[in-house]
Length: 389
Image 1 (cartoon, rainbow, N blue to C red):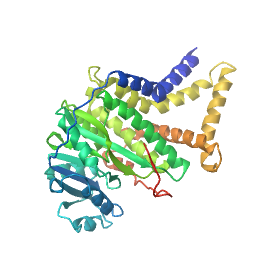
Image 2: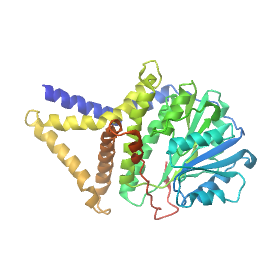
Image 3: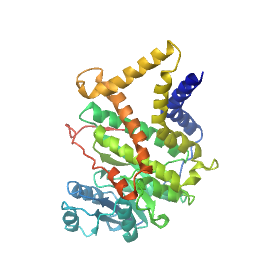
Image 4: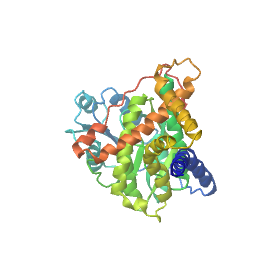
């Protein structure tokens, strides 16, 4: 009976984390929404772009920001170079617009770059963004309108992923759509669990220093503001655009983000207080994701101890599932089954990344920086390719 109980419990947990919780969340969000007040406003805005070796992107990024539909005299851009060696500093320093400034720092990590940028910013609202993603012209305006509600301390926008060249990239985009669906529902009930680092605005006076070793600045800073009794809001009309990433890049990104969740748990123990409105959602979504690889491992191990014929059925189903994931990279893009295998492979790789995140407990702080891998992207074959919403 014990193997059967372990098998059923682990399988039920997996189904709950992947499907059950998102569906329950969606139903609850429809029944108990908590809208905010939105109104156009024009406070001074400082845009902070931390970057290391972003010469291939920085000029396009600056153009994207300066062409925003926002009063130009109320907008400035601060490029914070974290030890760049590829000409990023020269491009930013020589940009022909007085609203653009460069802050050049020795290599220290993204958290330090953000801290220094916030200390130098002059705007009432600080917008944090990465160098690669371009902004929609109305993005800044849409973000700022949400601060008309005095309860709002953080506003994050929607990252749109372009259509990929391969099924591998498309399944990564599909994962983002799944994540955004969950995020939109969390937003409806005032239970957001972080922000999108590529497009995030904060009330600058609420900012706190980010510890240097933090891997998730876009979760730490919003939570620090949320624990000051301010709301994190997701404005899906404020859009930034990004290119799809390979599964390998997404694997390392997921290792970093899941390792970062362990850090967040240590820095914000209040998340585990049942009176916190994020308690149930943090356990179901964030902690559940961390436990998912161990649940799948327990399903596999317990399968061998089940009674016949259930053991053969369970082992056979898992063998087919993981076999499809393993063989996906050798299956032609033209094969009909590729749609299935690419999705299964993406799921397995991302769950494996969550399992690898436990390295955060074994690596010293200086080596945790190695979890920051360069994200490699490819331009879509069709520049006019639609984005996944």
